[in-house]
Picture (cartoon, rainbow, N blue to C red):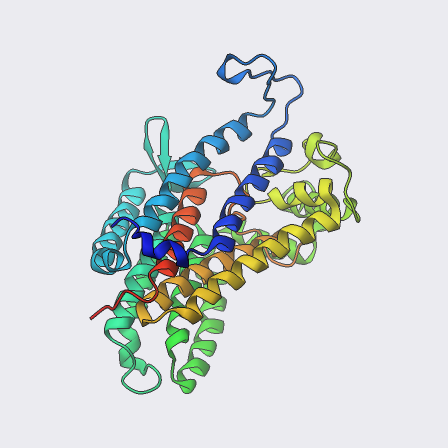
Length: 382
């Protein structure tokens, strides 16, 4: 379980540094997003240091826990993840069922299990569970030819389709789509019969049309419609998109300065600590700061794909690839939301948005990748 000293030489320092730098940058942005000039918090009885943001302190505590989670993910051997991936998957699916039966309701959705002062969002853990479970199944049952046929796709499709459906019932469209993207991308990684891809495309279009009439809630439909014309409901669903665009555009090249964002500090921007944290960054740090953060995410993707390319077994490659897809999907959809390209579906920006479950999940995943990177010449699934 613990790290062999011989593996330290293979440690991916650039990936590790990115895993620390991004959430630390997130703390700075969150401090501004939750800044309250009338608040005076004196931690550790050190009067010369005052904190004026509750969100910052909460996220700092989450980050400490997340770092422990990353370390546990890193020191756990790849063989252990392979061995217990099915058990982890079943446990998380049972948690999803528990959410539907006993979960706490917030903003019209039932997504959390409450344990006193601690709330757990199992749908975040599903992303890890699906990656590990699918990676084991695919590595144990690879395509008989150079790609999967229809019958071979039934079981793996069920493995990510079941939790996807349970999450959709909460309802949480963004996370459900993330799970679907992870599952489909991992299957595409090993190959799908070309004719089936065409069929899936047609089925996807038909499913989208059917969902519009029979599945989507009214508020979800309004979010899609307002994307094309935010001014049609500027005080309702259009408010978030309008204020988001104003915040991003007003930052111009170098931003308005730290703690000086008008949309943020005057509280015109809703959800500024969670899904729309990038608006705070763009307003105060400008295009230059935004480009820096996007560049850091791009470099993170490069390091993840580099681990995929250097993996010596299919299971390890699939795990890292699935985690890369999970992070890439979150980043692209979140940035698309804040600039009005995609409808608002409630996906946080990894490592920057406020939230303990999300931060712990991402850091845990990065720990798994760091562990696989060190052991890429050691593990065999047979």
